Image 1 (cartoon, rainbow, N blue to C red):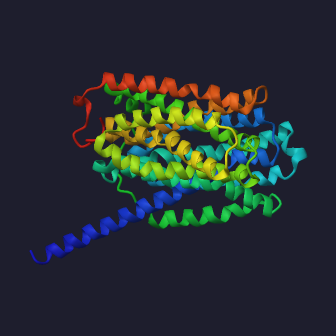
Image 2 (image 1 turned 60 degrees about the horizontal axis):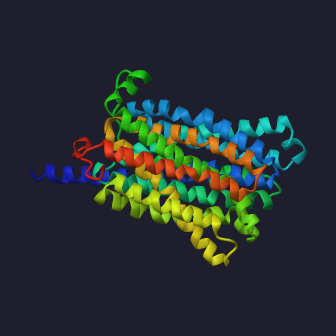
Image 3 (image 1 turned 120 degrees about the vertical axis):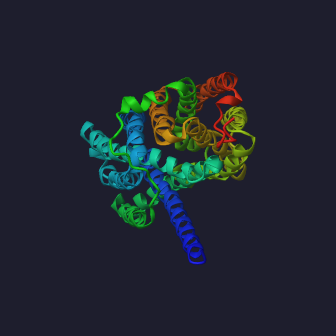
Length: 416
């Protein structure tokens, strides 16, 4: 007995060490994936691309790539999460070559140039599609009792990268004369770290489950899944549309160039990061749907105040960016964690629906706001975009009314 106890203790410590390294690697890889995926809005401004065309490229690449998260989710749930995390990260590196095309403006604004830019953006979008369902499910399954906290922390890691990406790209683009291939160095370093440290515990099945069969497993909860998907699609549409036009909005308000070229998005995302983790902790105690409704209601008010207020002192504007960013972004990890709690064995598939399919649907807003902004002013376009808040709140109330405590998984006390 005296020999077995140390062995058992040693195994527990080793497992905790592997889990800690895996989660820390997830945070860092998520930061890199979202950093390299967030460079398009500021690139299109630096390269002086046509807004409508740039918006169309963003929409088409998202529409092609992001729905595949559902397929990658099924594959991930069959023991391939680590593989998809690493391959997805590697594929996101293609945006490091955007500057190579953008520095040649005469080429960039031709049909051939736009095609090349789209082909550089598409692999990065596919990489995001591979990474997100696997990463989110690995994070959430580390401890189901703290699923909201872990998923929120995981998403916050991505948001840090999302905030840093535009500023990093702007810095390298302007300092190197457009030679953004230098951005390959950090992502290759993180990829190596992922190979060494990312070792999630996975269950492998002998035979792959057909996609249709995997979807059929969600049939008893399909109504709740689709309602939640529509809510997150609306939130994604508003967030993507706001991010796409944020440089133009800040420039129109007369704020400094460093705010236009990444600073504003950085502060908005910083607010999201600072709000997500406390929101996850609170959701695990009072319930995800209740907190989600609170965030949506407050977000609606903050969004329209943000658009209505004229030019104000910079420090106050930064504060507003952080508040709006927190409230616009909190709904995503809460919704993903809520969806995972509907069926933990299919967490990656549900994550793919809530993240990939929702973001793909929401990406239509980049084309729409780009098209409208060319014809009406930026603020008016964003005002129309904000109508999504009202629809999302109505859908969430319907979801809350249609579910009862009997639907909750007993391991998931925060699901209600």
